[in-house]
Image (cartoon, rainbow, N blue to C red; front, side, top):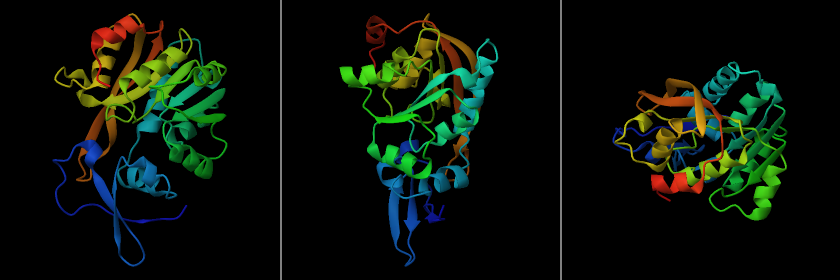
Length: 259
């Protein structure tokens, strides 16, 4: 895969929110094009750009860490990762799918809301997923829900797509309810989610879900998600657990989650 010339901002960007961070892509004439780190629609169209910035330069290790956490959770049961039918929510350009595929999962279904993600996966990682859907989990149609159900997913994985508005809490709950009863769940979230001053929808949901009857937490691990542009470590939590039951609408309504 081709290498790109990347330039990070010269000025301090520490005051920017994590989803406002940006970088420049330089062409052969030295002209700069600005990209926000979360502008997936644009970044995915350029082969290798996302990997070079996020994984090579910023040393993101979330796909492998969340997969390891899932593996550890499963080790406390009589199930194995290679037996599972996995739904990868917010699959992006397939980095997580690639990690899961190393473990030989039984079925792997990717879902993302933007077509550029599926196109990038088909271009760069063909064959990783058994199926890859472009769907909005906040407004699934009956046909879409039925299509996903035919795969009988029994594990939900979501990596680095939660907590910054990429995937709303409502979308996560829709996916959670799609997997089978006593299915497995693994995802990551920014480290502030345990702080009750973090009132974002997903942080609120995860805090309540951990102490609810709907999810048994098997493993919680704090780790370095990646480095910031200034070289400071950004810490996340990775969670692995087992679903006990679907989350009812009454539970969701009591949380008063933002849209």
